[in-house]
Length: 331
Image (cartoon, rainbow, N blue to C red; front, side, top):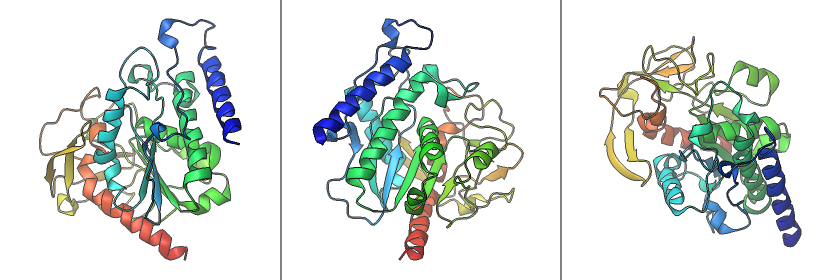
């Protein structure tokens, strides 16, 4: 059976390669695929606990870290990129790991240079290489690692797009829905069209509902041009857990935690850092940070880089709250 699974994995990788090169009928050096991860092997996982000791798992998909124009997909065996992912296991997945067993696959994400907010990236052949890696990793996780435990899905940015793709295609299954504690699709948009077309995708309405999608995109007042915010996106405020325009004062902020994302080292922690308010017209989570910050390659005021950092301790507590609510309701 293991040999057969390995053959299937290799055939799938070949099929993905054919798909990636089918766009315009040409193939250049830039298009060469990086090695296909084999999720039976520990080396294909950024985190795969040998002895899970918590009642709930989290399946975490990291955001875009790969900036190069060539090749167009991340090499999951590159030592530097693997180290960057390990840093994010603390800077982001650290809100989940105190409460849940952390499973995080390496995947061949598409380069930042190929991301295009004007198109549906789930149809992009290079995006599909990484997304299909995650689908295979999730299958392996369910079949061999999960052992019947309920689970959280969590990501950021490209990781959230990949998980939204997984939700759309796989979670019509009532058995999977029953095991789902919550989905944290932070730094991307879940739209009204998603909710209409995929009725099993339900947005969070409060701090302790389960089987729901928790999502927000952080930006300053008046910011425009976000590549991840689709107008009218579902949004919940991580300070007061409301979906309307009720403002949350900074006194509700349990602590912003700023990391070096690529080492996982905490740079500083600031209680009561900033407040927040949902803008129902745009679906943005609006905040005014008390300082100038480096926001990377994003338009002015688009605080995508800080979707986790600003609300870190509130998010950490909310994970515990939702897990407790799920376990209490499924005894």
